[in-house]
Structures are given as C-alpha cells and as structure tokens.
Image (cartoon, rainbow, N blue to C red; front, side):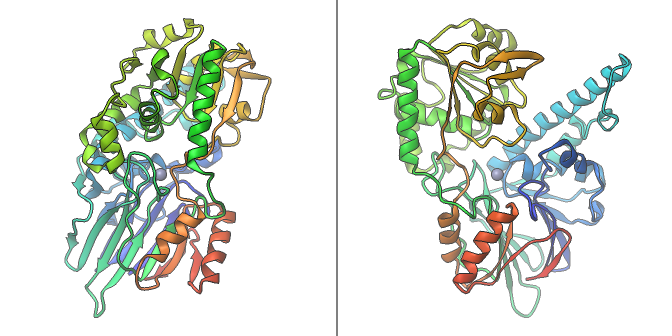
Length: 464
Ligand code: ZN
C-alpha cells in the first residue's frame, strides 16, 4: 500500500489522503481548507491528482474540514462510490447543502457589489460549488454500519469503527490482502475524548501496520470535564440573579446538541426550568433530526437521559425551529433567555444579531464553549474588546464574557497515546491533522516509547 498526503499535513483543515492499494486508488476524506481568505482561496486550486482516476472515497466524519471538497471532486470528474457511516451519510447532506447555500450567497453578494460599482472579490463571483454539485455527491454516498467489514474491491476490505468525536465519526481500517502478506492501514479520523457526552468512546482497532493519527491536541491535556460542568451551573445561577440573558455561540453539529444534553441532565440543579431556552439555528435543528434517527449509536448514559425527563430536545421551555421573525423577536427579551446560536466563532449566522442587541448590557452573559480562532469576532470578545463591529454597527461590550474550556471534541495527548497503545502490532505512526508544535510534541512522546513516528508532509508518499 502507498499513501500520499494532499491536506491536513501540517495544518488542521483540508484533510485528504490518497491510498493506493490492491491496484486501486482511494481517498480518505476530502475536506475543505478553512482559515484566512488566502487559505480558503486554495480550495479553488486544482487537486494535485486526477479526480477521474480515483476509484472511491472513504469518509471519517461529516465535519466540513473532512468532507467540504467532495462537491469539487465530483465537479472535476470523480464518480465512484463514497462510503460513510450511516449517520455521517445523513450529516453530509446537512453540511454540504449548508456549505453550498453559503457559497451561493457569497457569490450573489459579490455580483451585487460589482453591479453597484462597489469593491468586490473577483474570485467570489462564482460560487465554490452549487446545490447541484452537492446533489451529485449525495447520489454517490453509500451508508455503512460500524464494525461491518465490507469488501470494497477484490483484495481490499474496509471496516469503520466508532471514533467518539461527532455522531457517525469513524476510524477507518483498510486491509490489503492482494499481496503475499496482508497489510493493514488505520486512519484514526478525528478522535473524541474519553467519556465524551452522548457518544460512545472511541473503539481501538485490533492491529495495524501503519496508523495515520490525528494530533490536534498532541501537546496538551484537557481540563477536567467535571469542573467545566460546575462552572456552567454557576454562570446560569449568576445570570439569573442579575436578570440578564445568556448567549452561547455554538457549532451546529455536536456542540449544540451536547449543550442540550447537559441542560437536560442538570435541569434541576442549574435552575433551568425558569428560563426560556432558544436553539436559534436552522442547521442545528436539522442535525437534531439526524440525532433522533440514530439514537442506537448513543452510549448507555445518553440512552438513559433520552428515556427520562426532560428529553434534551423536547424540554418544555425549549424553542427550536425558529423562523427569522421569531429569531429577531428574541432581541426584545430583556432577561431570562438562554440563546444557543451559530456560528461557533461568531463569524456568521444568527448569533451576530443577538450579540449586537445584547452586548451593550452589563446584566447579560456570553458563554464561549468552543475554540475561537484568531481574527474572528469570537476571539475579539474573548480577548476583552471594549467595542466590536457587528453587522456594520459599532457596539459597546458591557456584557460579561466567560470562556469555558473542557468541552473539546478531540482527545488530548494522554487520550491519543492511550488509543494508540492499545492497537496490536506496534504499528508505525504518521501524524496528520495537527499544527507543527502539537505534532512535534506528540511525535517525541511516541519516539520515547520506541515507536517509529513521523510527520506527514504535503505531497509526500509513504509505503505501508
Ligand atoms: Zn472533526
């Protein structure tokens, strides 16, 4: 087997690894490059392989940095099968349709600016891809269960295993039995932390010859989750005393549903019954429908919570599926409202109009539960800006801001090392999906344990 790296080799986005095995070419993931404008422009570059010569794609999970270039792959000539865990298959529809909607909106805005004689970005006049491209992708998707080996081609078998990162997330195992000795490649995908809410813990594959291991948090240990949960409760009590609202920017997939799960579990002790709770995100609402369809993937604790009262998605004071008018109406509420809205880093979505109306008041609280990248509105707020620009308005910031760590969807260094250590065969490790520092630190930790560990480099080819 041979592997070549086309993305997420020295960065965390754009995951795309090419595997040659049993005379076929496969891709593991085909993710969007995300970050600055310059970074994102690279999505428009041609692939450094011919999409028409790829025989199939295996998906690890439905986050955009793992699936967001699939429509470009199909647009440029790929028409083979795309294998994905069944819940991932459902989430792909939600994610890619939303991505196309945003791309089409951006293009329309650029064309309008050109028509009005204002400055515009020439690259943006055409959408990166359209709804038609997305539908072409969805027609190729084949749903799969965990732990059910599938013969993709003669001599090549695929098994997906739960990665405990988001619903449907998988580690990929490929066994090539076409040669004299079978060879096994394992791709971790993104691995969730132990005890991740709702989902089962990541499953360890029995053995491998080579492991492509993610390394997002390869250089650190997470804070204790229990401390985070306690802190959340304190903030809700404090905000109630002060008569304010609580705004929570959150990603639509995973984090929003996880928050509702915590709300249901701590409904009494956090005093949530007296609040009005809004999940103001059309996308998070669609994702809830996918969760409802796949409750058999939940862990035991989540099944218990789902069977009890209140049900995380049906709390009597929870309002979901809001239209734009209802969303705007929340701006009039002076206190007693908890609003979960996207986007997670405040770069788009409905959270912006809530921030615009709520930031000027001292009684309000903004709760950051996820990573805030440099250059985003979320990051400026976390860094303590006294004024921010939101939707074209200069807004004074008097609301209290809280950064709550400990809810990461990625395993930390001890978690990654433990997952690896339980794989049989002492496989060689190649680190992907991490910036250079965490990858370097994790590589050193593995080398100290006498494991052969390398960093993947873009364009580099390795033998399994
Ligand atoms: Zn992910």
